[in-house]
Length: 154
Image (cartoon, rainbow, N blue to C red; front, top):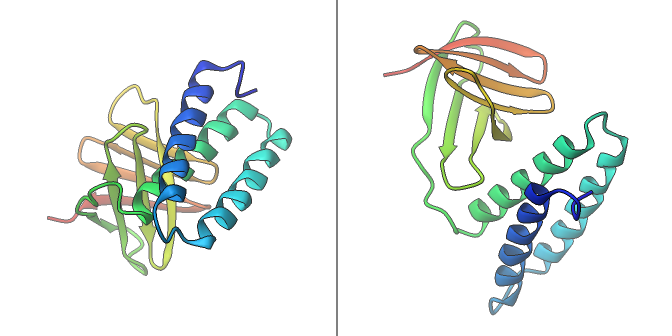
């Protein structure tokens, strides 16, 4: 699947470059290889998905963004805090605009890395079970079935 899809192949090459560079650093953590093996197993589970290319794309983007964050390969932007109709837990989003674009959504103690998604208007980030769609100053959030309507806190 990866070899026959230019976009997936490009993501595979980007991940391979990042992983090799981190692995080559003196004192590279043994955890890095273990987490990569775990990631490969998870990616390979995409054969069960209804939309296999979308599942594989999401897996690559999440891993690339995670490696960048965990290994200080990207400047961490300031999180945008939101006020939501259900304020039982705080909700925030940190937007990464380097390619591949993604957001880290935080709801209480839970986090999800969510790739940028196509949207006719506004900004949309979506992954299996998680979505943030911001349009005209309002944000609709679905965090694994928890639906929120939010506005950026100022």
